[in-house]
Length: 619
Image (cartoon, rainbow, N blue to C red; front, side):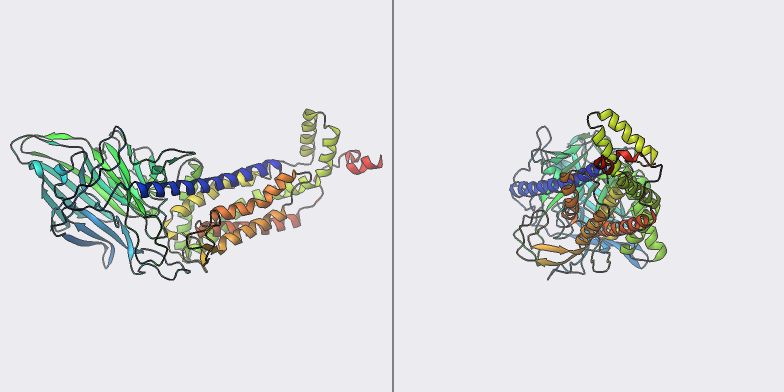
């Protein structure tokens, strides 16, 4: 690899490690901030809850207070295909919305091999779990009592769903109808009526989309976010943003996110693999979207350290402006509500409601994480390819990743082989290049011209060493973003790996909680795949020894590069480590084959032997 290639690889490695360190710092700050500033607490009756933190210039955050003296009424409905239910919906009278959405095809957590105890393995993934406000509840900004009262609604089952009704203070009446549909959808309609003989002011309303919550105790919540779409692009505000993170800079912690100007096509509260999405009619977008961090109850009876900071969530809502209802009038709102997996094929079926932007809900990433759109393109392509291999050949997703890696390596094989041959010729030219440097050491312009003459004479391209890496970088970033978002890998087994979406921890080394970046409160995890990945990277680097005359500092940097990647990917998805390990082993095999078939001598006319160092010594 030439000097340019070394610089590119080194910068990529430094960038990845820097990103990891910054994310960890932001996560720590988020945990400390929310522990000291809980902006949501469990609702209690007849209490005076502390006001939620607000952003200057914005209305105060509404606080939902339900009268717990009245018994809670719940209605449970299921939905899905014949003989197979997809989801179970629990409607609650407290808030008149969805208390819980259980996805029956997805387990709550995937047991790690090293854990002595885990949550109930029969439990299923639940959305809005442990949140204090139900999804599709109505809150009023500044004056919540006029739209919530004591918070208790009357629930009535209907032929296709549930109706929630309540007479509100001030004479208003609120009626909600929830109709279950296909593809994890609910058609929700809301009507606020003024049956009195006088006009009534209705404050600005927040229609709660739901609360993004971590799925289990191993979920640190850093992939949670509030996502909204303005008709052109989706913007995600992750949990780290509320801790002051954002791009390459950090600022003061934030207690609220608010955006939009009559252009909120849809908004979502999501975690890594699941989402709740509220979609108003395309001709009636919401005015704004608002999101706030909340503190959640701790996970119970999971056999892990319990003295850590309580988990956090993000409550997201659609905001509509205040209005005045004339006597004996009312107004209606409709929302199509999706609560289900971030599975690309499922979201594509929702198509029209999502404005045909299923990839935006997948949240493949933006900026350098998705290579400014190129990585997103490859993420969708690779996800479709992985699913196709899984479906066509009937193999598990681990083997699908292996086969996809073989396919990608095959596509890049000619380019990589040409690069390896060019590098070998470059090594053979090193004595003549050294002679030129000695002869023209005082004339840089002449030296450059003579070097390029030599390259042209022997048909060698000095940039060919880093070209394959630069071209394959978007594919790697596509894999990076795809594996981070692909719910298909959640719970997918491969050899000793229990879950391809998580690290392949075989056991914990207790007491080693001080190792930077990779230790956990339980100790140091022993993850085998990242170690195999690092070993294969080291093997690959030994097959391409540094060029003669390379700066010793650059040689040391290249020697430590595999260790940098191990640190960065050690606790990342094992699916990515599997891809990179297989790719490295294929590169090693290709390098050996190409070198064996490539002559060591330069392919071109022999240059003047008088320029070589050996000839100079004879003189």
